[in-house]
Image 1 (cartoon, one colour):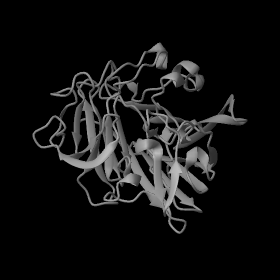
Image 2 (cartoon, rainbow, N blue to C red):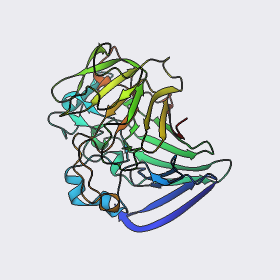
Image 3 (cartoon, one colour):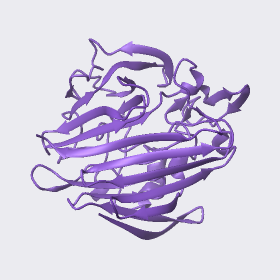
Image 4 (tube, rainbow, N blue to C red):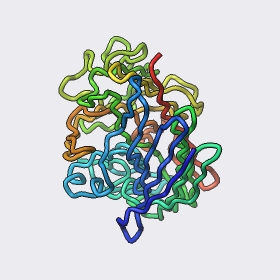
Length: 349
């Protein structure tokens, strides 16, 4: 196991962006940036013995900072917070106090606001080679940042195991009651050609998905997947029977005991022979097939267009802060926020 830290010479808000490399004895390699805790590269050996990068992104950090990219911003490989996905009308109340957030997606707040955790340079506070390659990032979000209450301290630890698992362990604490709903926004493509993900075989343990309004905000209604193209319980090709224009951009309620670390989804490509299994302690997985991707000059100059990747964003239900019937996303000062998500890669049997 090995960890390397590499300065980039690029600064944001007077803080240098650092690249951190994790590798294991099998040759699996993950490159992260402390800017947005971006997963920049995830290199694995496919069934043909070839080294393959399974995440979308850029060749260098400058790509993530360019005006062209940020003008049509898909959060490639970054953490999102304080609050993943959309909050209705960009507002909520905690303990009788009303809070107004930035409206950065129509009338709603998306992924924590204009300058969320994805655009922050995090501190590298710990690295370790043994027993597994590990790096821990930390960020302090001050009271009032993007309209959210309370000083919030967040740590995100990445661990690459010898079993080709990339383990994301999130913790946070606050000095004032505040909403928190973190996720990671990596786009995966397991095919060697990486043209699109329509032929990927996807299985997800979810009997219900969450209704959304016209701006994709969760309303609180659960809709059974039975008899619809949203039913991935037995697995099928992503493009089988789907909405060909829009693909998927929905949240699915996982069939699980709340808080347990269980399998959320399993996705595979016959072309590469790779399978990505995602485990999580979270109750919901948002499945997105990159309808709105319009990225030029990605890795090796490749353009990422609609359906060029898929995201499985493990989290609490979007807009939960405004839906009392859903599990609470309010963190109290005496509590510790904790979430674990695992990306496990394997060659198909």
